[in-house]
Image (tube, rainbow, N blue to C red; front, side, top):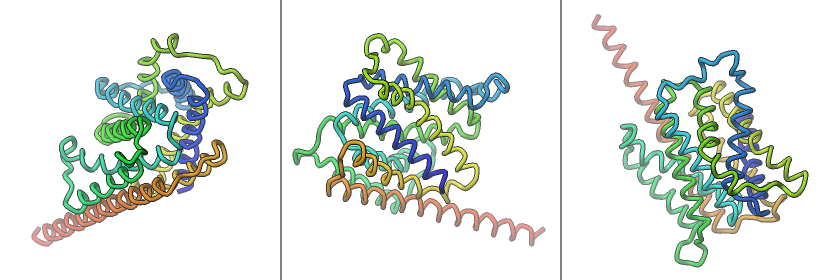
Amino acid sequence: MLLIFGSGLFFSALDASAKHLVTSGMAAPFVTWVRFAMHAVLVLLIFKAWQRPETLVAKNLKMQILRAVFMFGSTIFNFMALQTLQLAETVSINFASPMVITALAGPLLGEWAGWRRWLAVGIGFIGVVVITRPGFGGFGIGYVFSICAMLSSSLYTIMTRKMGGSETAESLILYSAVVPAIFMLPAVPLTGSLPAHWYDWMILLGLGFFGGFGHWLLIKAYQRATATALAPYPYLQLVWMIILGWLVFGQLPDKWTLAGGAIIVASGLYIIHREHTLRVRHRAALNAEAEELAKKL
């Protein structure tokens, strides 16, 4: 739980750093490139790629590249959204990702949801509507970017679930950083600009550290506990986002963001609970079937 909470802190620091840079005049594509380039360097150093190069070999290169493209989309759309939205707004919309994953898991993974989870999906999207308030003067381009980031993140997660059994964790982390860094390289001369102050240099170079170390803590957490046990805790990132939004930018979420975020979190937690319940029932049914078979033998 502490590792998950720590990863949420680093991911929040990543978003806060990116928001500072893009609202200070730096182009989101360049900030995105630096984030992935530094992340790739850190991954190579942490995993000591020169000692175990076989762990970084992709078994399905096309799928690795597609997954990395979704990771890139999630990041650049999020950084573009942060130009106009508060930290709490973007993370609340991103919490709708479990709903999208539930909806897409059927056609993409063959994991079809029942009516209870579909109801939770519908309620979760009501939460997104509450935050964005289309037609009431609150909806802007920042919300479009944030929703695109959430959709990209959902597809990235589905690809990770699909590839987790065949690809190494090291290769999944490396390609998700290297592919976007290479993909964005032509945009660097067009969008790149040097920071004006030394602390902006520190913040810019820290993007890769925050993202890379956050993912490393996430991996360590899931090595020590089951996905089901840890599932509710990523929602605590909202606490870090509210704190950093207030301390760094003097922004506090309004009542609509808090209400919509609460609806989304509640829906997501119910989906997690329902999937856990179904897995427990499935395991119990398999055990009962095995016992009956053993008696017959």
